Length: 188
Image (cartoon, rainbow, N blue to C red; front, side, top):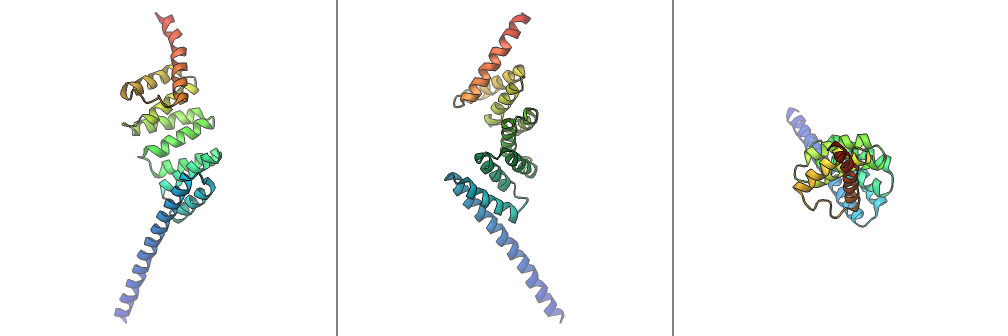
């Protein structure tokens, strides 16, 4: 009898291991399918696959990030913010969730929150100009032109072409320069 119990216990452990492996495989398959659908601009279908991945593995931060990206493309910003927030909590040392959360917050008119999140993203992204440029844009949209100019110029010094492909960033940079220049002249 003890041998039979040990055998049955072993089968149970093996079933749990295989089951969790299957769940992981299904999560990966759902994510791969979602990414392909997203690249084809089939956002609603991609969202359904990311939802499946997150349902299978709730702590899968990249699944929440993918959900957020789909939701943004579908103009469902409040839901995207929540998805990005979950991703950022699950992936606290990754730049992407914080970056996209900050951008979504800014687009929702929640500039103060966006600045805080983008400051965090910029500290995580020592070698990536995107959070720095987005932080400058968020600061400028909050009327903090001097800080925005400081961030933009530090980014341009490190990455000279970092804003060249973003008309919105160049506009915010120019606006910050135009706002700060008269103030600096008055100080002289």
